[in-house]
Amino acid sequence: MRARDARRLRERYGPWAVVTGASEGIGREMARTLAQAGVHLTLVARRRDALEALAEELSASHDVAVRVLEADLADLSAVDRVERETRDLDVGLLVACAGFGTSGPFLDRALEDELGQLDVNCRAVLAMSHAYGRRLRERGRGGIVLMSSLLAFQGVPNASHYAATKAWVQSLAEGLRGELRDCGVDVLASAPGPIHSGFASRAGMQMGMGQGPEVVALSTLRALGRRTTVRPGWLSKFLEASLKLPRPLRVRILTLVMGGMTAHQRG
Image (cartoon, rainbow, N blue to C red):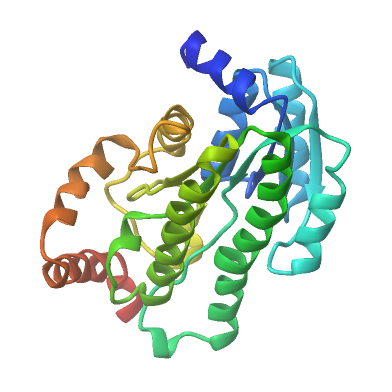
């Protein structure tokens, strides 16, 4: 990270950031990038062992304080606890990376799994944005990063519900940016394409071409305060060209892409 980018993050969005989904993938790389910039961190995820290992790494490598909060954000009481246990901190940034996906025919999925996905990808994001958004508005400056996806811009067979949750996140981020801009609070939707992280394994996808989560973290944090939506990395920018096509054609293209990523499920 360039020194001027690090200074901007630290001065505008410090001294503390809350990063959810910090135990792996994009959330973990967001935490690493913010620590490099000198921002203190509260790391939130379900896996305490992974969070503690990351906290030890960041504390040893950078001059930052790190808190660990084990929480399953599918439970709204956990969201309340995270906000309550960070009230003593001057939080200037929320990076909401917690989320997961499912794949394959929607009707073949267990409803319980889909409702759990809705809770984490939407309800928890709503509750976190509301709680920390109020704090940042009162503070008079800060930022909120919400994780969208390139799948958010059209329906996608074999990822129908996941794409729908990300469309919801995208719309929320766009609306909040307009509401909070005059309050000194920046809101950004980050819409990456295929990323090599723990996401694909949990979603039951086989991903060939993809990029590392560190690309998403760096591009996203650089774009915060400058754009409404960022599509990180060269692969996302390449796929972005498809967004200029008519919506039905985009659906057909992504049907083929997702069909290839989930072909193993059909034997």
